[in-house]
Length: 305
Image (cartoon, rainbow, N blue to C red; front, side):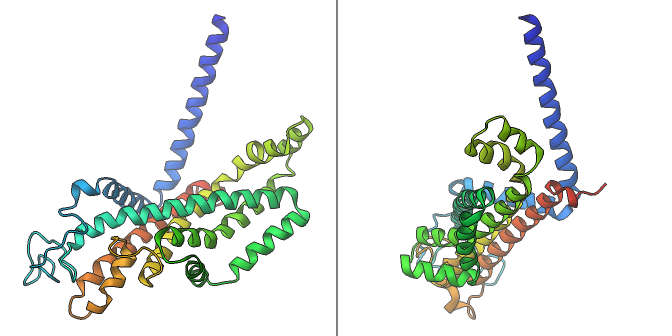
């Protein structure tokens, strides 16, 4: 019994050491990309800002100050210290709305990516594992979706389903799903005839176990990179739909919706358009930089000696 416990402890220590070495190797390749490290810190700051939005925002996002309509930023003439980035046409603090808007944008990206990732993996692994008519049917549907411009297809789907945040997220997830399905299919087809899969099949593993426990874990790395890049695409598509009036509806402080409600004041109050646009730009750029770093760290072909 003592020998067995000692063996289990040694195995646990060995596994922990292996995980530490894997994490150290991952960070070595990831940190070699300076832009990816900067993007990671910016994205972490955005996440913290979204989590603690009620604590750090100076005002409520819907609170209106009727005596301060279209107040310029604090550093410009006519600005007020209590409105650091100015106010919009109905006197709402832009900084507070941007901070709370981070919650909506990150939530949209997370929900869209999770839905597209899960459904894309299911379709891709079925197509790659079984092949034949299953593969042909699934891939032709994915090809049809990919044949349309993504924003146009999302716009059509939202027009059918009706404007709103949930319908916009569903439409964007459907548009992004084929990327995950095709990537999973290619990875499964590359892995399913390898020796370890054949050995598991001979040992009596079921189709479900082969797909989910044997093959899928070896296809995760490219999916993580694609999920990161799709996260930024989801935020961008949601902002575009919000700008066109088909996504989140006012008074929700979503960045695209903020742009839509401010566009008529672009000449006489440019700050109401500039700051939401910068928030979208910085967020999307940071996530794309993180995706580049993950590609460098997870793809063996990209690793440098």
